[in-house]
Length: 397
Image: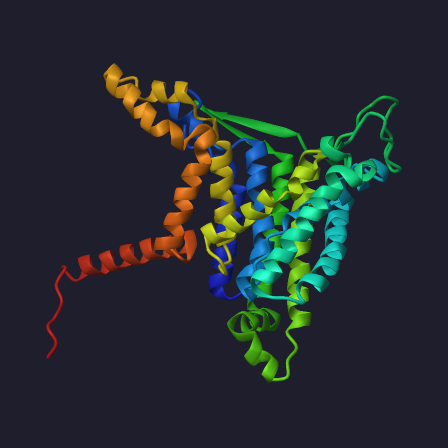
C-alpha cells in the first residue's frame, strides 16, 4: 500500500496517528493541576515540533545515508524563510506559493553550495558548509540589509500590498490558506482539560507527513541504496566505475530543499524572519536532533526534534518559584537545598540538561532514542516469553 512494505506502513500509520492526536497526547494534565506546567499542546510549540521535524528529516537524508556531516544546514532554513516572506510581501498572502518559493530558493542555493563543498569530504566538507552558513548569516545581518532587513529582520507590514491580495488601506495582511487564517483555532473543554486544535498546526502536520512519506521512499529506493554504498565505502564504489558525486550532490540538494520547506513553514506560521535562523547554533541544533533521535533511522530525527524543542520551551520555563511550589511539603531547609540542586538544570540552565542527555545517548545508546525504544521493546518481549515458559529453560541434551 502506497508503495510501502508492511513495516514501513505501520510506522507511517503510527506517526500519522500521533501527529493528528497531538493536542490530546501533549496535554495529559488538567489545567488546574500543578503538572500542567509540562503540557505542550499549545499551537506554537506543536507547530515547532513538526516543522523542525521536517528540518531534521531532511538533514538525516544527507548525514544518515551518506555520512556527510553538514554544519551549515541552517543557511538553507534561513534562505527558504527569506524566499517565503518575499513571496508573501510581493505576490500573495496564501501560504502555498510562499512554501514552494522557500523550497525552490533553498534548492537553488544548495546546488551552488553543494557543488563547491562536495569537492571535499570528512571534516573539510563540514568546515566548508559551516563557512558558507556563517557567510550567509553575515550577509543577511549587515551587507544585504535592503533584502533581509538586517538585524531586525523582515515581517509583513501595513504598507505591504501583495499583488494578489485585496487589503484595505493601512490593513496588515495575515498568512492564510485560501482565506483560512493560520491562527484560527478551535478549543475543546473536557472537564479540567483544554485541547486546542489550530489550523496552522494541522497544515504543517500534513506537510510533515508528506515529507516523512517521501523520506521513507528515498530510504527504500535504489537511490537510497546508492547513498548507503557511498557511506559504507566511497573509494570502493569509485573502483566499480560509479561516480558518487552526482548522488551526493542530489542528496545534498534534497536535504537543502527539506530545510527550505521548514523555513517556508516557519514563515507561514509566524510571518517574520531574522538572520538568527542562519547562525551556526541553529545548524548545530539539527545535528543534535538527528543524533539524539537516531542517525540513519526514519523516525529518530522527528523524536530528537520533539525532545529538544520540548526542553527548550517547557523545561526552560521552570523557575525557582515553581520549584519551591513543588517542594513546599518538605522542611524549609531541605526544600531550599533541593531547589539549589535542581535549579542549575532547568530554566536558563536547560542546555546543561540537554548536554548531559546527549552525552548519555552517545555513550550508552549510539543508535539514539530509537535504539533505546528497541531495547525496551526487546526486554518486554523477552520478559513475556519468560513468563510463558514459567521462567525455566530445558537443559541441552
